[in-house]
Image (tube, rainbow, N blue to C red):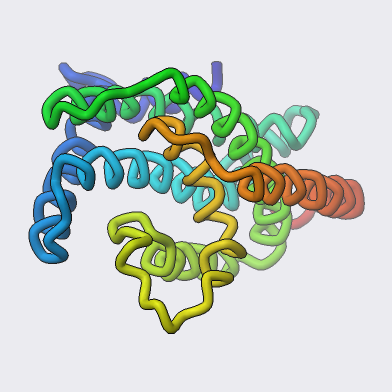
Length: 242
């Protein structure tokens, strides 16, 4: 309810409301796809669905992490007046961005229909991939929110790091363009590359590699252990830091 209220307030008195998210994202993806596809001479019939799925996932992860790091600070008034589990504010941020993602996901089948790209039954695996990504984003946001509440400058550092990761992760560029003299570990050890793939590959009609599933699941287990330890250690201090 809090997440839906955030979106409703953001687009209050707008005729199109939340669908401005979809329109803006569609323009962004179409522009990037045509420009970068022409520059790198990619086959647009394959490149447009690829970049569409990649950008949609990246926008969801980027917004979740950058806004999630401010979850406690943006909910200061509630935290100082009402005693609720701190995870409530993390879920509020994640659900808000997930609702935006659900609005935008209609762009992918629309682009596939326009370019004649066929979707098969592997697409159902993207639901499980999205669940794993959601679990990983949760623990990242918990840790980031705790430390950003204590160190306010850290949020700007996170924004800068996400901007760098956007360029080193194959979002707008294809893995095929990766220079052969670079180690493939730069991709396989990049968590955001794996997060995108477990959702994108099924949408494109392929099964993600088993190593990508294992990497994401293992990272979720380790990350949640770290998040529960961090929140358990510092949750009594969060209200004072606010």
